[in-house]
Length: 104
Image 1 (cartoon, rainbow, N blue to C red):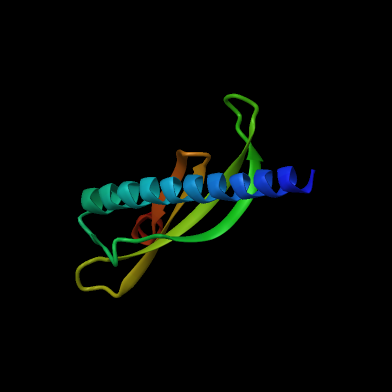
Image 2: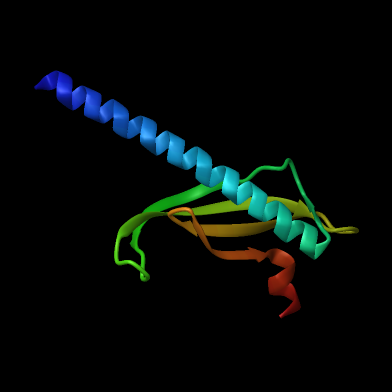
């Protein structure tokens, strides 16, 4: 019985790690596209997960992990700026750059 629980826990941890790694890869690729379109440079080609919580997906009603990532970018003649990206499962639901907020 204890062996089954340990194996199930280990498999759960491995699946969480695999899913998190894939989500981070998707987030980096999307941030790179957003930065390229905005003609700014994504710094360090990386994102940093800031928050993780459970949220219901409106389209199918399932509860999924929601992740908030931040990233840094450089716009010419300016210092480092921050952007964010929100994901629900493996789907990107929101992305914004700091320069977008200043222009509005």
